[in-house]
Length: 303
Length: 157
Image 1: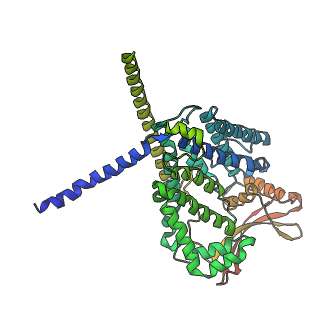
Image 2 (image 1 turned 30 degrees about the vertical axis):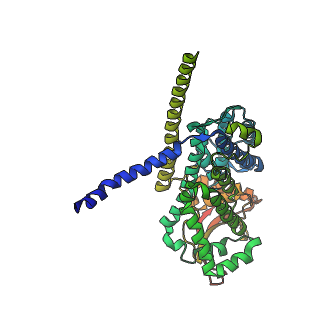
Image 3 (image 1 turned 180 degrees about the horizontal axis):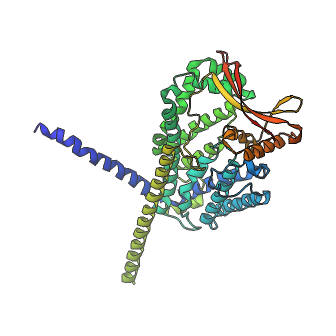
């Protein structure tokens, strides 16, 4: 009799793992309402559209071919692309976003916009430095390439509408987790409990935030608090994003973290903030509550 | 009619189940596949954008730092550090400086000429360009002091 708990431990361990996997699988493949996929699909497309629209991509053409590095997905392309090709890609990408928003061939539109965006960003970043400014948007949007958004008049709840936003959430969580794990891998907890953040601020602060950066750097508890908060947020992202009620909080926390980085160091992670918001905020609502579609469409939902 | 409708209903239900099963398979393949790729890329530290190891500020900074700089030297010995244009596309080409000593002489010359032109300097007015490593150490107030400079490479443009 006394042996049974000892036997039960190792025997139940695989069962517990199995149950966890089954729960994750069930959560991923559970039916979801049509409007949630439409919201996330449209909002992420709009983020891509905004990034495509605001940048002068023709600057890429000014970079001499000899200074173009080829460690990207467009590394096969010889030299620098001509300005007309860059503008054409920008326009085609924006047209793709228009198709998504208009709900006319939205799936095709999303794929076109994503490919144009990836291509332009890859060329933009072919100067020798690994650029992460747009990589969360590109990666988080990837699962949505396989989504079949509802056509006009198509409603209801199904696996087809449910999984793509959840997959996007899972991929975003993985990205944030990896940024935290790489800090631990290469620096350990020294990343937090040392003068690391103080020196980041002293060496990298932009002029507008010089006084604030110096103030934080001169107060080690504050600098270490910032570093600890950032690392904790990255490492716990999967938890925040797994629980529906905390997803919007993660979006707010990410906004605060990336905005403070931008204000102090001048590094623009606005695409990360927008992408997190585009996915996490609709996914923080209960399944019966649309974000964008009200009254008439809601009646359709309830019927 | 009832029988027909029942039959249609069953067919529709079977169709829905098949559609759900197909979508579930896609969901698993896409989600697990993407996450596995992200983890593997991070593990092997591959950088092939948009595949990246996600190393954002992952190393510890200290008061000691070093940086590379190109310095154009005129025939009369006048030195002029190259200041790359501020936009992101051009300014980040400076991240290629560490690779410059490992390039062939022809590539070194072509790159140096491209950087000179980008900085508004006529290569014909330059006798040579040096790649200089500058080491700095900062005191507790954060004020950096140059502790050493070393020319790593000389290129005639």
